[in-house]
Amino acid sequence: MKGKLIVFEGADGAGKATQARLLARRFAAEGVRFHEIDFPRYGNPFAEPARLYLTGALGAKPGDVSAYGASVLYAVDRYASYREDWGELYEAGGLILANRYTTSNAVHQAAKLPAGEREVYLEWLFDLEYRRLGLPEPDMVIYLDLPSEVSEELLRRREVETGAKADIHEQDALYLRQCRESARDIARSLGWRILHCADGLALHTPEAIHSQVWELVQPLLGREKA
Image (cartoon, rainbow, N blue to C red; front, side, top):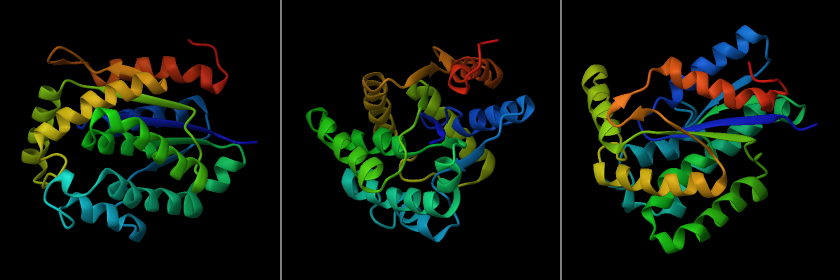
């Protein structure tokens, strides 16, 4: 019996890691058995190609590496993680909670292409990862939407507070706006669950967003909504 795969996607700074953490805590409190994954797996050698891309070793701007080329770099890490870490558990019926997945390629790489070429790219991407590499398709993708102005401000604040250097995606404000616009269209067309993380420029609290996440997830677990 195949397992279940829940994926968090969203705009940069929207709180994907935070919501994955809150849902993991909720699962633990409710006695739900699960396994967490997070991409890219920085520090793992199979994630090194993606890290090199993001740090600018293959080009200083996102567009310097094609949508197809960048997608393959990330796919290597996902395939390896499935084989190394969570594939057997999933195949045995386990619940997997992912912070980013194949869907991140859809969000960030499709934006590099003209609108008329995105559908062909998405068909190629999902054929590569879900069929040729044999990775499971998500049962639910929760897309955290955030206005670009808010996303950019949060990324700048995080860079100042942590001292961490922004990657080539985060440094390119125009690219991030293009990602958001294409991602919203993709999310609607693929049936992702879209949660709005702000009213205008006013952020919702992580707890308020988590309440919406829990409402979405309960039926997937075979439970009635509380």
